Image (cartoon, rainbow, N blue to C red; front, side, top):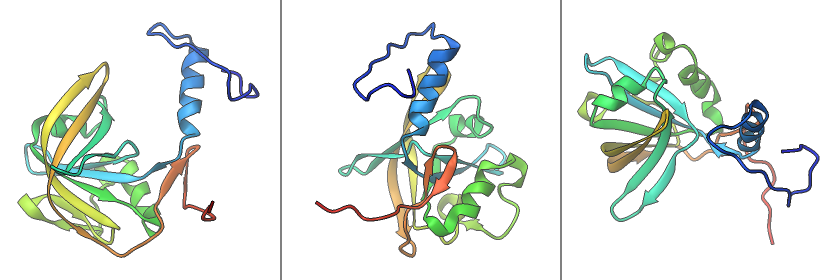
Length: 180
């Protein structure tokens, strides 16, 4: 994938991708801005775990289903592989520091007063734009990753805020509103 190539250029990837192909693949997705969410749960000993996710998506409104992807090498995967319940948090612009905490060292993610116990004793982050507690109904293992499907059971809306976005390895908030 050539950085200066026209948008109509194509590239073919295979399981035996070259390092250049892998770099191009990663660069392409870095150019795709995504909303920032945090997923929290409890491990088998009741210790809170969590991580930032940019792959969160609504799967269905009826029933209310959400999905996200995660690497099975992630520090939170063992807990997510075992637990049935979790909390999905949507972050706003004001939550940039929270996103950085939850993307930092696992041992430091729940140090502080930025969370409380919620439904099923799950960790719920405070002052987020929305949170939803749900039950994992499916885990689909794909190579070294997993697609997790969650049926939403309860939640709450927080204060309205511009969404927090992740793009080109940096946090952003939307700029100008584009109109027709």
